Length: 115
Image 1 (cartoon, rainbow, N blue to C red):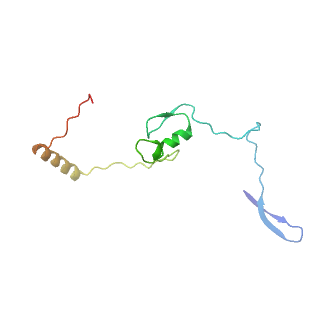
Image 2 (cartoon, one colour):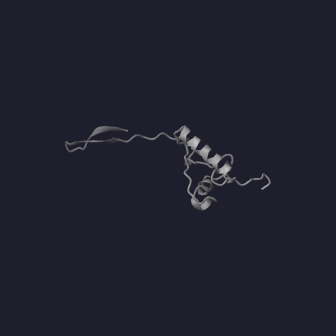
């Protein structure tokens, strides 16, 4: 965007934007179209596959997924990576509590692979 001085014709000059002509996008007289996905995309909210961007976006809303909560679409945004740090003191405390529970007879329920 550029600016220039223009003469108003009555002895005054004004500083205005210079209109820049837009280059043609194409020789075809049609609007630019953003199409849906070329291949189906799986939603992380409910696990279903979608070919429509609108349907995928609806699955991220609280009313469209089984969790009943809104999910955020990140698009091309990058998430900041934070490395998980484990505290030695917390680990030792958790192990001591688990050993005490086993000695006291508080065993976890048995989970079978058949269920």
